[in-house]
Length: 439
Image 1: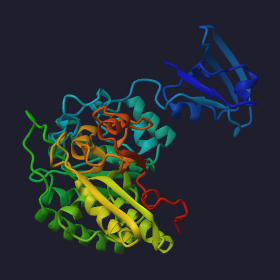
Image 2: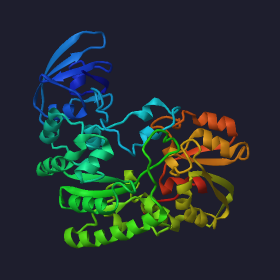
Image 3: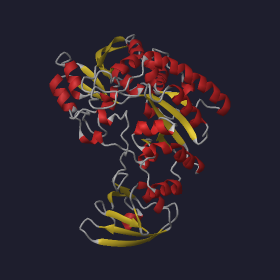
């Protein structure tokens, strides 16, 4: 086990002792470096014995004395240097199991690594933790962590995860809370399984762990068109979404009175399905679960509202088309309506139905190149097309079906521009100016 050194800061301690990009960091003070957390924890010492494997195969042992807050100046390649801790469950709702066979292999990796939870906010189930993992979490006080709970009822959770260890959720939460580790929790709502009384029990028991549990996010089960051989599940209906909204509003009232925060929050998708107004920003408190699709619409709309005063009254004649998922079209429609009031500007939405994943998948982030090409065809040849950055693989110009931006451009002959999913970037791309300033 070793960590590849990607870069060394000029003039740093690492540079002074001869460390170079391409070397590998093997241990610090006799301790393995399995991840960036081990590295950060170890380099806090003032006396270090570092074992290095040079790029040419030589083994070095370097002794270093430094100040407690002084860094080594080493940039490591990545965050996890041993094997990722993958999921040991077979959740009835697992979206990875619903992916088509021809998606890229990396999308089928089932991440359940507590280090990714701490570093990036990924949700974990606590079912694959070994004693050494627990020791590390508690010793390093890795807080906050993001926990997929789904149900506090032991039998229901074990059944949902298809893992008997899933029944131990209370013990796991209590252990973390007693150690002072804050938690953000998630419930994937599956009608007929963990809704109704089970959902109420789950919310109320999780709320009992406050302030250890800082948020409870509820998201609807996602069902693709590729569920052959999987358990039968029902989507959340519009009526069920409306009932849930009322129920959670009542919980929020109680928890605001009791704790000063709403504590339990619903995914934006519930409001879209119920054709219900999106809550204002106060509903979301600190927007703790944005990456879970909770509060993104409100943030986007609020950001746009702050930009409206700087919108021009007219522009040089300009035509722009925005590609979006079906759900995204509902979010963007009021913004597009306002932008159309700018003289000289023609702006249109192009909602893309997800044929690749299944029409029930309406989020923009799961659009594929082949579906976009099928809808655009040659109808938009030479026209300005905005694609949301969220559809691309991180740091690559490739969509989840491995079709590249270059292939989309070649197939459609459109003028493609990728736009980050913030209101300011969208407005600047549509209006054709960089003078819009957020408040």
